[in-house]
Length: 208
Picture 1 (spheres, rainbow, N blue to C red):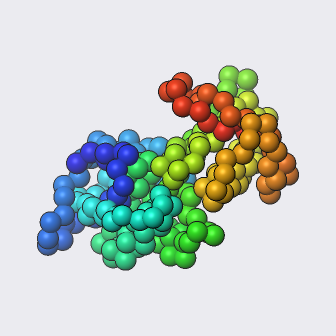
Picture 2 (tube, helix red, strand yellow):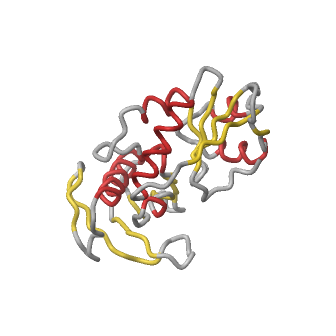
Picture 3 (cartoon, helix red, strand yellow):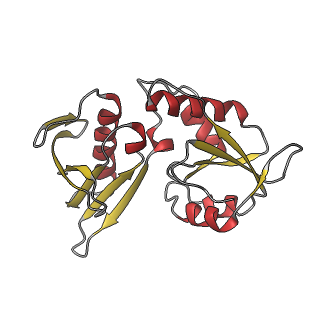
């Protein structure tokens, strides 16, 4: 069973297959996803125990944010004691089941659980500077955020990127090229630039 990244669904991973129509697990795909889960050190060990998965999908919703919130709520309702991990299929993010419930239970438009939906990938340059790229904001109807060549520490970079990501996901408009945004750590200048991924898309480059 591939993760099928890009699909609007959640996979609930279980150690044992309950009665019903649960699906088998593609261990290789899940292993790769777990290795990328820097926020959950035990991910690889836990995911390796998965024997089956329950697939949760959404019905139509007015907006992409509403769709993500609906899918999150449906997943929380379906999680029981047999679920050991949750996969957000659009980005391949793997979460501890208890952590997913904790972050998702009170989620709403004013308090979006972005860490459940959006991948924050840190990078390090040869000169020791840090960078970060998001994956998943586009699925929420926003631009992806990117940082390159920051001399700040990782926590600072992550907090700044998170603040900008929340702004983009909740704002009805996209910042103008060169605009300055007010965030927790101060002011950040943003530019609309070709994505560092080289895929032909435009991302919001943040100077941190």
